[in-house]
Length: 329
Image (tube, rainbow, N blue to C red; front, top):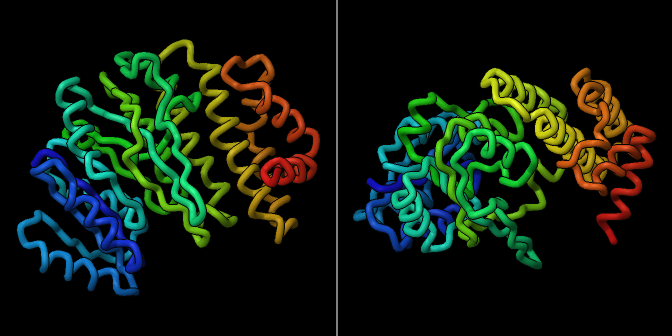
């Protein structure tokens, strides 16, 4: 098989047919589809079995397991995959029909471990095309450059808008962390070991924005993101790559502090006591105090975020108020 597509499926009866059919209808041949039914309680499995029965010519594996979350389902898919390359597709999203053919050709021609594409956020009333990465020349061949691009936000930290060489993933014994939100974060540690990363300037992945998503609410698990962030920082430091101090500071302040505070500001307004408790927890972390040092001199952090970080340190509640006003404007 050229490509294995791994699809975690949990209670996505409404969306799973569109998702799987977007892979079946790909222009590339030799595709393996692995759907991991993560103990769905709705009709997801029934829909999958109907698709399999009516498309017997397709290499479609349905694996049912006890609920392990998105990460656990992806890990099961990695173990079952046999393709030269693998892609991850969430059960409520879908692919443009040329995605696998185009990305596979780029990966094969460029001998790349990772190929990245743009993606589209699909809302109920609009679509928003976003860049999966901003890379000069669209090719990275140096570990420091690859790490710098991820740490500073020039490459989006997501597993889904990428194609990975399967042996590259397997040899590093990479697994997504089970039991955490923001499970895509450790992808940085995987791609840190790549020798060739290529970017394709076209949107192929459609990312459905659902109002009931856990990412559109607040949860005690949100603050636990620090565990994954620390793992990434420790991993990169252990590699001994020099000259990444500002990139690591930018990564921590943006990926942990600002992203969480902004999410809390938008979705925590109904429970301001809990929201403010999370604010204090995030800002009181030893790592937060360390990475706030001289952030205003960091050339990777833009002026808007520097102002935001300054206001955040002065008054998290006032920052949240201003951020909600800014988002509604």
